[in-house]
Image 1 (cartoon, protein in one colour):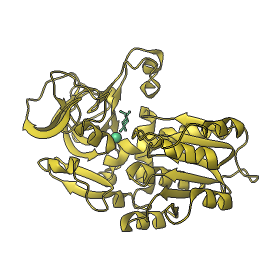
Image 2: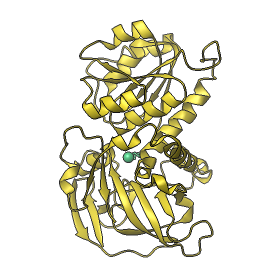
Image 3: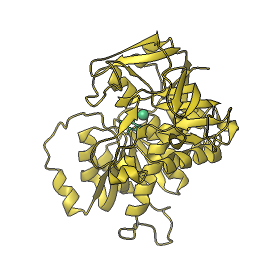
Length: 355
Ligand code: BGC
Ligand code: ZN
């Protein structure tokens, strides 16, 4: 069968024929896989934790949608069911045993297509029932490939909801209508964050350093999200006018951390998701602000099964209404491996169609 392989930590990408390794569980046929920054970093040899399962090659792919070909002994799934496989697989620590491998305590987990486990960019694979999430609403089959990046956002919602009650951080009518969330980054993850938090009644401002391209602008308009182009108006000027109550970074640049700490309101909440590894261009004095302003800063990675389920639910309820289909800007054949290294004009989410 066809598979897309890389050689970590060196990287590279190629399509080749491999044999399907029989494993316990259900037999699945891949429908779609998405490509994200993590895949590109692995291919470019920039993700130092990327590692193989066996040998020196890794099957890429952690964002997937698949169909059950043989349900084996499963009670939960039957042939023909559409599923999303989970990325991270637990180790033995307490959090992993609780199903919260996203909060793994000792790093003893593996991640399909990223570290220690072959991914989903292949025609077929085997997986255990426990790591599959069913897509009951077949009308969203074209969009459900967004479940994996969206589950990261659902975990952020979980974090946010805890933190907003640390001290009452809502408006005096108990809603969040008077609050502003600045979301840094307008790639798939940034736009999904903006869309989800908007549905929670928060006023969302998407931030980037350049004007929004047509696709992004349209998506923001449909979702009633504001846009700040910092090449046009500085973050400090904008946030003086509107107040930055909350901030989420989906870029991963230390300079954004600085911008947040300097401009966020007292008692603000900030979630850091991006991990681009871009180093700060200034010193670290800005960290003092976090103390003085009682700022909560929380790092967030991955998500649990419940977040995949919430993501599927969100796509079912809002996918069409909020134009999530606009985020899929290209559908490619597995052979077109140049998509890992090329950046198409206006690209947001690239998807590979397997069958
Ligand atoms: C995935 C996460 C994963 C992280 C780090 C992201 O692209 O969405 O599930 O934990 O990469 O490997
Ligand atoms: Zn990803």
